[in-house]
Image 1 (cartoon, rainbow, N blue to C red):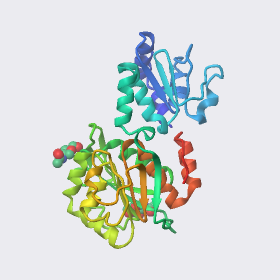
Image 2 (cartoon, rainbow, N blue to C red):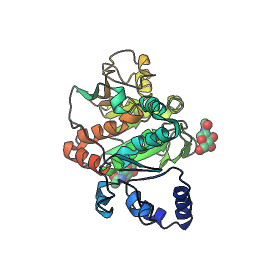
Image 3 (cartoon, rainbow, N blue to C red):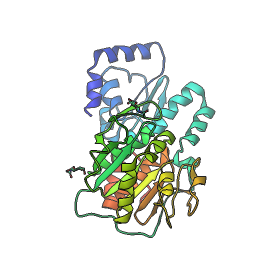
Length: 317
Ligand SMILES: *[C@@H]1O[C@H](CO)[C@@H](O)[C@H](O)[C@H]1NC(C)=O
Ligand SMILES: *[C@@H]1O[C@H](CO)[C@@H](O)[C@H](O)[C@H]1NC(C)=O
């Protein structure tokens, strides 16, 4: 919000969506949008729908269903950022069938597919700070955009000060699935302040670009020497490994990259914390990964309340 209100008030969008429904092609809405936009347009009629818990009371009681995904004819509705992977996969299922959706779900690393345990911590040390934590998230062309967006979104919801810095010449980067992202600054302009955490997103091509950044390398080395927190998800733990930042640490990475982590691998866990280093497997563990950071910085209470806001089942510490 107020994005859903802006969508609702767009007359062109209303016309397109109404025609879509009349001609019985697939359409959908998630989070506040089913209640705010679809209902306003009358597109909930004769349908069962769901939406974000905070908007459930706006739905007519006999239409409302409390489920993560509700398929009702051509309409699919869902609850929030934490259910968006399932929501996307349910369209894949409608379009290409159950097996394709299941296969893709496995490849995208739904937590239920990828790991025996969601989180494991070794050498537990305190991460809490006296001030608002400052976090640097570098991005490059080919970075896994969903990992970037989820990390930034969840950390900012928890009131972390996040700086997204491009290692490219341009602040505009193109993610691995061709989604355009705009960084807050370039890494050159962001290399002065001290960051409490530096977290690297994955994406194979993006990670190769990271390897070429001397500034990033220097920042990471300083981070380790000063005993500050750092980590990476998906294929980026490989850089940490290559730059000697995972020495004597247990870590995990994307299944396709994990063989390159020679040393102490905890491959059954989606998220691994060892002292002040955090690593994660990939896309569908990114929410667990982000919530694990929040738990370490602020405790369980804040992680739980952020998880509730995005409609995600939090597994606790
Ligand atoms: C990265 O993507 C941007 C577009 O956002 C493009 O202008 C730039 O040339 C790309 N850089 C490299 C090194 O491919
Ligand atoms: C957020 O982080 C940036 C970069 O470290 C810093 O310049 C800025 O002052 C911080 N803002 C707050 C409110 O701490």
